[in-house]
Image (cartoon, rainbow, N blue to C red):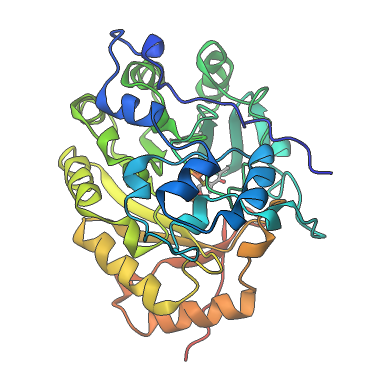
Amino acid sequence: MIPASSRTDQTPDSSPRRTDSGIATRWQRELAEAVKSPRELVAALGLDPAVLPGALAADEVFRLRVPWSYVRRMRRGDPADPLLRQVLPVARELDEHPGYTGDPLGERAALRAPGLLHKYHGRVLLVTTPACAVHCRYCFRREFPYAEQTAGAPRWNEALEVIRNDASIEEVILSGGDPLSLSDARLAQLTDALARIPHVRRLRVHTRTPIVLPSRVDEGLERWLSRLPWPVVLVLHANHPNEIDADVRSACGRLRATGATLLNQSVLLAGVNDDAEVLAELSRRLFDCGVLPYYLHLLDRVRGAAHFEVDEERARRIAGELAASLPGYLVPRLAREVYGAPAKLSIAPIMP
Ligand SMILES: *Cc1c(COP(=O)(O)O)cnc(C)c1O
Ligand code: SF4
């Protein structure tokens, strides 16, 4: 039996009553209108309804959520579309696989305060919200106990107190969920508090929102970013070149104009991007948007995601082919997260 995900009904700050001014912005409306029903997605893409029973069963464990702007980048009638595969619940998620667990990274052990993960020297990761604009089926935090472990508003204080009292922490990483599913006002509230801690020198934001919902990069977000008192690193998350369309390119341009450094991390996913040519094209398109590749992660063994696994030997060969086809700065580092290790582990490519 698979435990019900603790995040199936977590909603981003998309409902009008939760906005700062009482009026929903464009991205908040788009988020509220995101596809949440497998039936609706299958119908919109003209897919074979035979996939529905499996989709509905897996949806019970971890809800479908995908903005229309991302759906529009999928091919109609193609059940193997690489973007669709990242978001459509499938029956295979319900199979049990030895070694696939609810907490593959041992994150619960690394918590120093509600929502504050401290695994690596000098940097902490703050789980700011359980909500994401999209639900990725391979997500390693599908079963993270967000209800107890989010540093959300009244509970930021405890996490902030730990950061304040540990001068070795020089970088704060806003993560989640997806921090950009918070409103600009809530983001500012958090960074205003961080700005009062003198030893914090860098701010990093881990976000997939500019890729799946580029309208999130609006004037309010630009204003928040450009007023931050530190060098800012935005680590985006795109897995396939088809995710990069004109709207994403223009969102990245606006993010860059705030002075932020833009990086991308991908997850190596069977049936989505386990191909050196696809990954090479992703790197080229990202660079066209001013984004440098950072990590190519091996899948974390989270329950429900085994069908996305690419074994390490194949991953190393793909990484080798990728390295052989691109300039060094367009090659992401193949890495795996290993429980208890002092950094993410780099994995050597096997050259062709
Ligand atoms: C991935 C991760 C980081 C960041 O690691 P980098 O190698 O600096 O990108 C920090 N904290 C936690 C808990 C992480 O999982
Ligand atoms: S956006 Fe990131 S945190 Fe959110 S579901 Fe996807 S992989 Fe998980």
